Length: 207
Ligand code: SF4
Image (cartoon, rainbow, N blue to C red; front, side, top):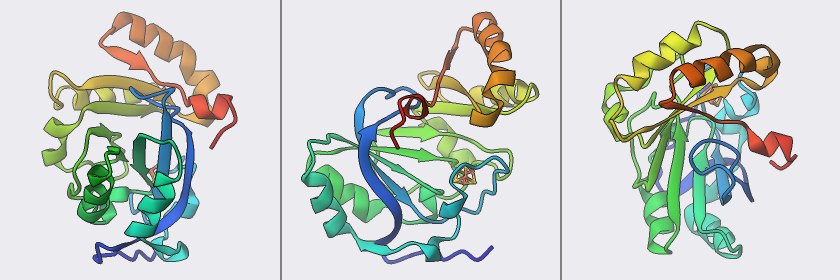
């Protein structure tokens, strides 16, 4: 797979951007403007946005244009996702957003160095490329996708490494939800530090 890592802080490869409802994790249910950046080298077999992987397939958008587009909506919360958004330097994007009063959240696997200024970091570690150790204490939320039974032990390994205030979520992999949900319900009842995250947006049919 060919990857283009953009080091120009003024332009970013944007796969899509849209105003919707955050469907996952701590901010589930809140109106949020999503900016999905192109580029990912993590390679999750069950990835539902494989089109994002090759950054070169997506148009480079100027940060100022992006911010002014967001400003035309009533959005307060901006979610930067991907792909793996930390394949890009996000300092300029988050500075521009925060200077306009937006709340900046990121959803990341943590596999690349952290950049940007964040109101909330959702760390979703992946088995296919481990997060860098330095992001673990900075995560506000740990979200582990459950694909099979062995993922509970794997989730616990990361729960032991994040800060005590980090919120802990287990989320079923969409295509495995029917199989793993009963296991997850029992697991969370037995281990109540975890909460259930559903991909609410898929149930209400919004992007
Ligand atoms: S990190 Fe996200 S975008 Fe990248 S392969 Fe995994 S699920 Fe897909």
